[in-house]
Structures are given as C-alpha cells and as structure tokens.
Length: 120
Image (cartoon, rainbow, N blue to C red; front, side, top):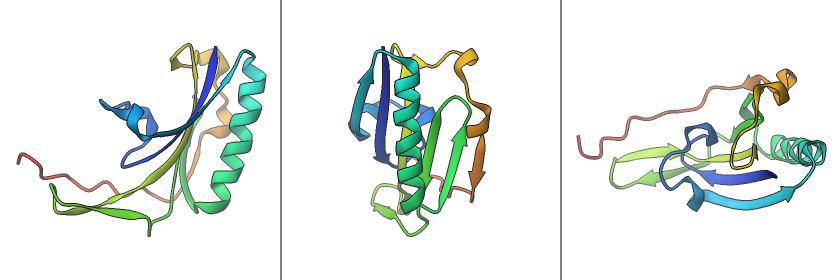
C-alpha cells in the first residue's frame, strides 16, 4: 500500500516529529507504486507553482515554502516558517532505496530554522 501525504506546518516532513500526523491535510492511497508516483509528481508540480522555494529529496519527500508564510510562536518568541509538504510512503514507512528517484534530489532557497527557546 502506498500513500501520498500532504502536510502544512512548522517543519519538513522527513523529521517525523511526534504528532506529525496532526499537520496532515490530505492522504491519497494507491495499490500501485507508479500510480502513487504519478500523483506525487502532479502534486509536486502544483505546489512548486505556489511556493518559490523547496527542498526535494530522492526518497520522495519534499518541503515547499514561501518566505513570507510564517506564524508567530508565543512559546519561543519567534516567527516559524510554514511548510507545504508532499511525501510518499510505502506501508507506512520511507520507500525502499531501490524506488528512490534521484531526479527529485534538488533545492531552491534555504529554509529558515529558528531555534525555539521553549524550556530554555
């Protein structure tokens, strides 16, 4: 089973921080890898039109962002970059290396990673 996830939140999808599922905005399921890959590619192109910067990986996980899309974090007294992400998982895990797509390994821009001072 393949699933293409879309997220919107404070961090890139490859971190899989606790509670990442709450940032999921859409999940689309596929039985066939190539159908899932085709859908991922369409969403990748759609998101790239609206978000000028991105970090894309060959393991089919991409974070897109617009530098002006930030939210204020009261707890850490900092603006946090917001990311629109799309990624493909196989059976709930990162796809196996033999299915990686090197052509997707690229980036445009550098994400802003503020240091959260919560608890510090």
